Length: 165
Image 1 (cartoon, rainbow, N blue to C red):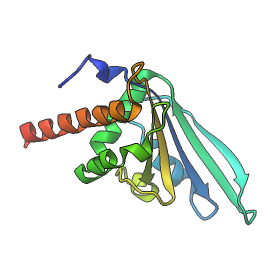
Image 2 (image 1 turned 90 degrees about the vertical axis):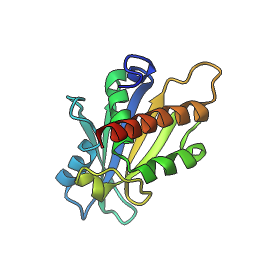
Image 3 (image 1 turned 90 degrees about the horizontal axis):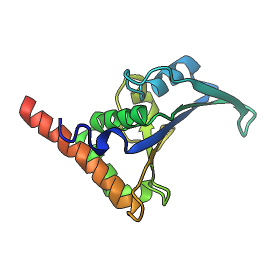
Image 4 (image 1 turned 30 degrees about the vertical axis):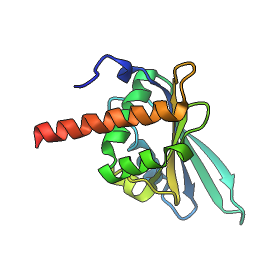
Protein backbone atom coordinates (compact mmCIF):
# COMPACT_ATOMS: atom_id res chain seq x y z
CA UNK A 1 0.00 0.00 0.00
CA UNK A 2 1.48 3.31 -1.09
CA UNK A 3 2.42 5.65 1.71
CA UNK A 4 1.54 3.28 4.58
CA UNK A 5 2.90 4.69 7.80
CA UNK A 6 3.56 8.13 6.31
CA UNK A 7 1.17 11.08 6.65
CA UNK A 8 -1.68 8.74 5.72
CA UNK A 9 -2.38 7.53 9.24
CA UNK A 10 -2.49 10.94 10.94
CA UNK A 11 -3.53 13.80 8.64
CA UNK A 12 -7.26 13.93 9.45
CA UNK A 13 -7.79 15.02 13.04
CA UNK A 14 -11.57 14.64 13.28
CA UNK A 15 -14.80 13.94 11.46
CA UNK A 16 -18.35 15.08 12.09
CA UNK A 17 -21.19 13.34 10.27
CA UNK A 18 -24.71 14.73 10.56
CA UNK A 19 -28.09 14.19 8.99
CA UNK A 20 -31.65 15.45 9.43
CA UNK A 21 -34.46 12.98 9.99
CA UNK A 22 -37.76 14.55 8.97
CA UNK A 23 -41.19 13.59 10.37
CA UNK A 24 -41.97 11.49 7.29
CA UNK A 25 -38.77 9.40 7.60
CA UNK A 26 -37.98 6.30 9.61
CA UNK A 27 -35.38 7.42 12.19
CA UNK A 28 -33.77 3.98 12.33
CA UNK A 29 -33.16 4.05 8.57
CA UNK A 30 -31.74 7.57 8.70
CA UNK A 31 -29.41 6.54 11.53
CA UNK A 32 -28.34 3.48 9.50
CA UNK A 33 -27.55 5.79 6.54
CA UNK A 34 -25.35 7.88 8.87
CA UNK A 35 -23.63 4.81 10.35
CA UNK A 36 -22.96 3.45 6.84
CA UNK A 37 -20.57 6.41 6.40
CA UNK A 38 -18.38 5.07 9.25
CA UNK A 39 -16.00 2.21 8.37
CA UNK A 40 -16.43 -1.01 10.37
CA UNK A 41 -12.89 -0.64 11.75
CA UNK A 42 -14.00 2.55 13.52
CA UNK A 43 -16.05 1.24 16.42
CA UNK A 44 -17.97 2.59 19.42
CA UNK A 45 -19.15 5.78 17.77
CA UNK A 46 -22.12 7.30 19.58
CA UNK A 47 -24.83 9.06 17.58
CA UNK A 48 -26.24 12.12 19.36
CA UNK A 49 -29.88 12.98 18.66
CA UNK A 50 -31.38 16.45 19.00
CA UNK A 51 -35.12 16.77 18.55
CA UNK A 52 -36.32 20.08 17.16
CA UNK A 53 -39.42 21.59 15.59
CA UNK A 54 -39.42 22.71 11.97
CA UNK A 55 -40.92 25.82 10.44
CA UNK A 56 -44.39 24.24 10.34
CA UNK A 57 -43.96 22.79 13.85
CA UNK A 58 -43.09 19.37 12.38
CA UNK A 59 -40.63 17.21 14.33
CA UNK A 60 -37.06 17.07 13.01
CA UNK A 61 -34.24 15.05 14.54
CA UNK A 62 -30.63 16.04 13.94
CA UNK A 63 -28.31 13.04 14.24
CA UNK A 64 -24.59 13.68 14.71
CA UNK A 65 -21.63 11.34 15.06
CA UNK A 66 -18.16 12.65 15.90
CA UNK A 67 -14.91 10.79 15.38
CA UNK A 68 -12.16 12.44 17.38
CA UNK A 69 -9.36 9.88 17.18
CA UNK A 70 -6.96 10.60 14.33
CA UNK A 71 -6.73 6.97 13.27
CA UNK A 72 -10.51 6.61 13.05
CA UNK A 73 -10.89 9.99 11.37
CA UNK A 74 -8.26 9.15 8.75
CA UNK A 75 -9.79 5.70 8.18
CA UNK A 76 -13.17 7.37 7.61
CA UNK A 77 -11.66 9.85 5.13
CA UNK A 78 -9.84 7.11 3.21
CA UNK A 79 -12.94 4.88 3.14
CA UNK A 80 -15.10 7.78 1.91
CA UNK A 81 -12.68 8.75 -0.85
CA UNK A 82 -12.33 5.13 -1.97
CA UNK A 83 -16.13 4.62 -1.94
CA UNK A 84 -16.82 7.61 -4.19
CA UNK A 85 -17.06 6.94 -7.91
CA UNK A 86 -14.20 8.16 -10.09
CA UNK A 87 -16.54 10.85 -11.43
CA UNK A 88 -17.43 12.07 -7.91
CA UNK A 89 -13.76 12.12 -6.84
CA UNK A 90 -12.86 14.28 -9.83
CA UNK A 91 -15.89 16.49 -9.18
CA UNK A 92 -14.69 16.90 -5.60
CA UNK A 93 -11.22 17.96 -6.78
CA UNK A 94 -12.78 20.40 -9.28
CA UNK A 95 -14.97 21.96 -6.55
CA UNK A 96 -12.32 21.89 -3.84
CA UNK A 97 -12.16 25.69 -3.40
CA UNK A 98 -15.87 25.77 -2.47
CA UNK A 99 -15.55 22.77 -0.14
CA UNK A 100 -12.56 23.78 2.01
CA UNK A 101 -12.42 26.59 4.55
CA UNK A 102 -9.37 28.50 5.86
CA UNK A 103 -9.22 26.30 8.98
CA UNK A 104 -8.60 23.18 6.88
CA UNK A 105 -12.07 21.63 6.98
CA UNK A 106 -13.41 19.71 3.98
CA UNK A 107 -17.20 19.73 3.58
CA UNK A 108 -19.04 16.93 1.75
CA UNK A 109 -22.73 16.27 1.20
CA UNK A 110 -23.71 12.72 0.27
CA UNK A 111 -27.01 11.31 -0.92
CA UNK A 112 -28.97 10.14 2.15
CA UNK A 113 -31.07 7.58 0.25
CA UNK A 114 -28.02 6.02 -1.42
CA UNK A 115 -26.15 6.05 1.92
CA UNK A 116 -28.86 3.82 3.36
CA UNK A 117 -27.76 1.19 0.83
CA UNK A 118 -24.09 1.77 1.67
CA UNK A 119 -23.37 3.71 -1.53
CA UNK A 120 -21.57 7.08 -1.31
CA UNK A 121 -22.58 9.64 -3.93
CA UNK A 122 -22.13 13.42 -3.82
CA UNK A 123 -25.52 15.16 -3.57
CA UNK A 124 -26.55 18.57 -2.26
CA UNK A 125 -30.25 17.81 -1.60
CA UNK A 126 -31.32 16.40 1.80
CA UNK A 127 -27.80 15.04 2.38
CA UNK A 128 -25.68 13.31 4.94
CA UNK A 129 -23.19 16.06 5.78
CA UNK A 130 -19.57 15.21 6.55
CA UNK A 131 -16.89 17.58 7.80
CA UNK A 132 -13.31 16.30 7.72
CA UNK A 133 -10.91 18.33 9.89
CA UNK A 134 -7.35 18.28 8.56
CA UNK A 135 -4.09 19.11 10.25
CA UNK A 136 -2.69 21.46 7.64
CA UNK A 137 1.06 22.10 8.00
CA UNK A 138 1.92 25.60 9.22
CA UNK A 139 2.07 28.01 6.32
CA UNK A 140 0.52 25.58 3.83
CA UNK A 141 -2.54 26.48 1.77
CA UNK A 142 -5.47 24.39 3.10
CA UNK A 143 -7.01 23.96 -0.38
CA UNK A 144 -3.75 22.73 -1.93
CA UNK A 145 -2.98 20.45 1.00
CA UNK A 146 -6.43 18.83 1.00
CA UNK A 147 -6.44 18.55 -2.81
CA UNK A 148 -3.12 16.68 -2.64
CA UNK A 149 -4.52 14.42 0.10
CA UNK A 150 -7.50 13.53 -2.11
CA UNK A 151 -5.21 13.10 -5.15
CA UNK A 152 -3.06 10.65 -3.15
CA UNK A 153 -6.09 8.48 -2.33
CA UNK A 154 -7.42 8.71 -5.90
CA UNK A 155 -4.01 7.71 -7.28
CA UNK A 156 -3.71 4.85 -4.79
CA UNK A 157 -7.21 3.57 -5.70
CA UNK A 158 -6.47 3.71 -9.42
CA UNK A 159 -3.16 1.85 -8.84
CA UNK A 160 -4.84 -0.95 -6.89
CA UNK A 161 -7.59 -1.22 -9.52
CA UNK A 162 -4.96 -1.53 -12.26
CA UNK A 163 -3.06 -4.20 -10.29
CA UNK A 164 -6.19 -6.16 -9.34
CA UNK A 165 -7.95 -5.80 -12.69
